[in-house]
Image 1 (cartoon, rainbow, N blue to C red):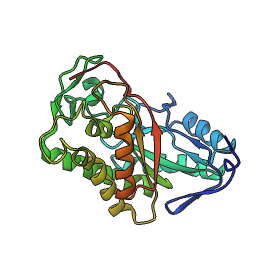
Image 2 (cartoon, rainbow, N blue to C red):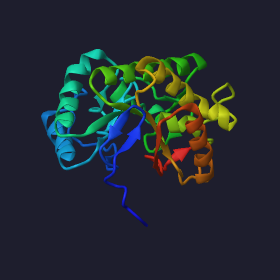
Image 3 (cartoon, rainbow, N blue to C red):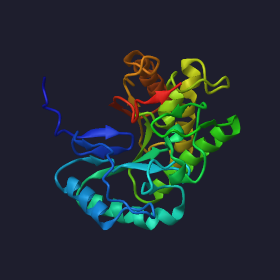
Image 4 (cartoon, rainbow, N blue to C red):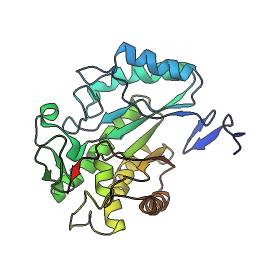
Length: 264
């Protein structure tokens, strides 16, 4: 296998990366209870930029206070977060890297003690490691969620992020719509491949509308959920082609889900 191109530039949408080295989103454990980056967070990620990564995707960032995955997840649901986010993006840019914001909602993986509301997902399917009852989002609520993704993307753009990563992997909300294991809907968002992909497609369209035609939008997919009735490599191939046809600028491929203890 040849790695000759690792240090060559690459174009993603309207952004040129100086090389092919990308730091993927990982929980740093350094964010605050106010849903912001701490000084430690900013120092940690800017050091990765100084070390030579062309693209930093810091960690999942919540589009809604009702979708956080933990009590300290960085928020993107309100413009009041912009000064803190800008402090982060400025530090990363100063050290020579680009940075994308990963838009995240936990869906059925939410915990009520963190959000203050009952968890909800594409279908009323519970993650049994949390032992919380999950309700199904109404059709109207699904469209509201799509609008939230667009709003969060625009806030990230205003804060200096160079692009967006739509999180549809690891069993979170985007992945829950894609997976036949967690999506039992009978409206336009469930059933066929085209219907299960529609949420991810409409989120792309909303982000593109508010952020412009050249702003990079990439998609993170789980190639295999490692569940007998979940998304497989074959499914991921179909979704990857749909993502390309929709207009996503790149695909960030991963595997698995956050919790394998799911109950249909």
